[in-house]
Length: 181
Image (cartoon, rainbow, N blue to C red):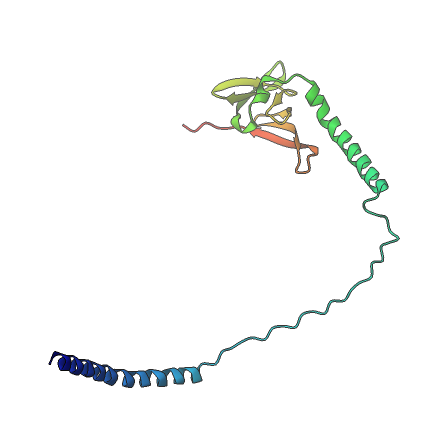
C-alpha cells in the first residue's frame, strides 16, 4: 500500500510540474523571437588605413649630427656662454656676504626712509628689528644690490639663474609698507 501511495504521489507531482511549465515557456520564447527581430545592431564602418609611402633619405651628403666637428663646436659655444655667465656672478662670489643677505626678500618690509649726511637711507624691518640700508648695500638671497632709494621704494638689482641655468640680472623692489592700526 505504501508503495502504491508513493507512486501515485510521484505521478501527481510530475503532472503538476508538466502542466505549469510549458505555457509560460512558450510566451517567453515568442517574446524573445520578437525582440531579436526588432533589434538591429549599428556598426560604424572602419576607415581604411592610410597608404604608407616610403621617402628616400637625401641628407646623406649633409653634416652628420654626431660628428666630432659638430660636438666640438657645440662644446665651444657652451663654454663661451658659461664664461659670460660666470663673469656676471664671479664678483658676487668673491666678495664677503653682508648680514642682510641671509634673509629672503619676502621676509623684509620697508617701513620708512630718511636722509643722513645728504644720502637717502631706507628703514627695513626684519624679524621686528629695524635695519638702515644705503645705496650699494646687499639684501636678500639672490645677490640683491640696492641701486636706488626714494621715499616709497627701495630698488634692487638681483642676479638669478633662469630655467636654462644661465645667470641673468633682474630688477626687484621693496615698497613702503604702511602699518594698519
